[in-house]
Amino acid sequence: MTQTPQTFFNFTAGPATLPPEVLQQIKNELTNWDGNHASVMEISHRSPSFLALMQKLKHNIRHLLDIPNHYHVLFMQGGARAQFSAIAQNFLGNEGKALYLTSGLWSQMAANEAKKFATVDTQAIDNVEGELKTVCWPKNFDTNTQDYRYVHCCPNETLDGLSINEPLKSPYPIIADMTSCLFSQPMDISQYGLIYASAQKNIGIAGMTLVIVDEKLLQLPMQVGPSTLDYRLALKHESMYSTPATFSIYVASLVVQWLLDLGGLVKAYERNQAKAAKLYQAIDTSKLFSNWVEPRSRSLMNVTFTTEDNNLDKRFYDDAERAGLIGLQGHRAVGGLRASIYNAMSDAGVKSLIQFMQSFEKNHGAAKR
Ligand SMILES: *Cc1c(COP(=O)(O)O)cnc(C)c1O
Image (cartoon, rainbow, N blue to C red; front, side):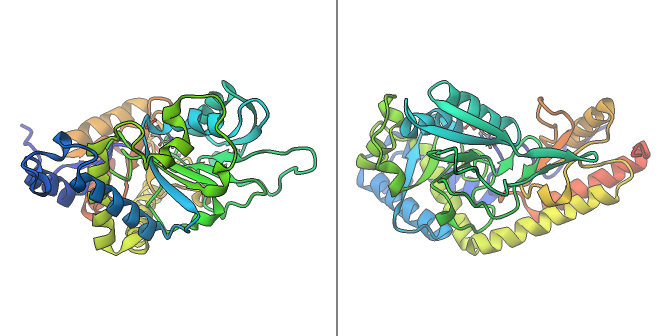
């Protein structure tokens, strides 16, 4: 007979788990938000309450990431995938050319989308060393024969759990899809021309996409493309050219406040490092589970692993789910198992997962080479 577990931990890659404190606050103020006698979903985005929320969120994001003054913070829509098109349309058009560094599914898809609108070169930066995957930032760029408007990359490939863990240097502005890693650690914004992240992984819920862009990149006029993807229009209208994703922005404001209360990104990073180290260690010392990423390229947020037996992997995530550990199935494109341990995943959740892995290993023996 199976019992319903007392506690559940959600390791899904995205939409992903939220801090319990944030969920509680949403519940508490849902029907009467900020004294409006209506929920935040039901009031005008131009009401004083909502305008104040947007201002405060922008301010808090600037504070959290220590964003220099010449960068703008925009709230866009259409997910990270809309940014795949927006970036090419805003910065390339007919004349411009860009370099897309590819290291997995998301960076490849960004390149494919850009190719619809513009001339794009691609360069694979992922590799297999022995049996392990790695990713390396290019040592140098060919500035003699090429003039790129930007170089695009995905610092954390969510599917493979493959991460560029070295400083990014480039003669061209760097544009980074940070959907699955923004807010996981402190970073130097000035290294980038533009950063984007859709909210449903580490910022809140689906709907809003955060864009942080260097003013210098907005000097070029927008090429032909939809107005809703035009960064200059978004800036001019303070992210309200069309009605913004109000509930998603509201949830992001609570998550960002939660992060600040936690002690900001330095504290979040410490927590994240501790969680990831524990989990990778459990995998490395296991005789059943293994991880296919070279340690220096391992992701802090998406920990991939496998028993190297599809049936046993399936058994694992089915059994785990019954034990209250949700969403451990790997992405359908790569298979295996994956634990997404974003900021909102507690240390208790990771501990529970490790305990479950150990008891599963006892019951199912050692399959690892
Ligand atoms: C999830 C994810 C996306 C897709 O985001 P959408 O909001 O669904 O468009 C893109 N890039 C990365 C790195 C992701 O993790």
